[in-house]
Image (cartoon, rainbow, N blue to C red; front, top):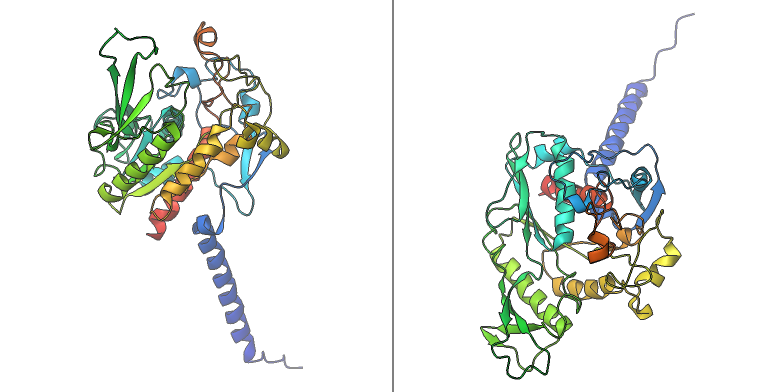
Length: 390
């Protein structure tokens, strides 16, 4: 019996099937490479992922001693680094240092702000060094610290500018009438960027800004207050600290918009939450916790309505978000995911014998390796998306 002839439709069906499979796989690939707009990387949960190992250890030459919790012999660092951030509706890939530096070839990344951006930078440098062990320290153009990666011609650096605006100490001129206790003032020129970052606009292809942790009366008490100037004259009537922050934000955002090239990727990192329990840093506040907070605990710790010692992060975020409305500066909202991690600060493991007795526990900065490595994963993913999609 002769075999049946294949229907002439059969090759067409095979072709259509293969075409559909190709289109489907292409769509999946496209969706993966385009993930940030379709995925909120800032909302999610921490899950215990014990096999997860940091990409670097205590020997990274870019460490800052007070944050090097491995070297300072914090015993539960393995547990701290076993938690993985999982966004609600997509995957957050771990940074591939070689691939990322290849993407950034002949480009530069700058961080501008306070020591929490330095904490961020150190994590970034230690992760990236895995792909270029010839990386060397770099301090130019007013940078506080940084590194150059010669295999890729990439520089990543930090410019210390805690208020972003220029400020300077002015001692009290006369001691005759000293009843008010005033020792002098810190003059803040709200419309003049700090010298440390004023001339960097053309050098960096990516800039990450922050400010916030110095805007408190513990830094500038009534004996040495901030006094705000505009166009060389004191602002009158005088304004308080939070109103001063609003004016500084308005002026610095305006400066960035005008002076930093439009081709430069611009991010503004929202506040890194503190985790002082039982008092502030100078009131025996502590953070000797062994696991992240639960979701229901976050408002108890951070909602300003509860008037706790850690309320300033959400307060300042509101001011920053208002200042950035309508700009091309992208919000890097790392606050919520970091609020959970009360377990991951240096606390008493500071590397110096008398540090805690002098300064108290450090429940503000982060152990490295640690939470800032997740910040690096998120930032690098947003940079990758922006560069690959133009």
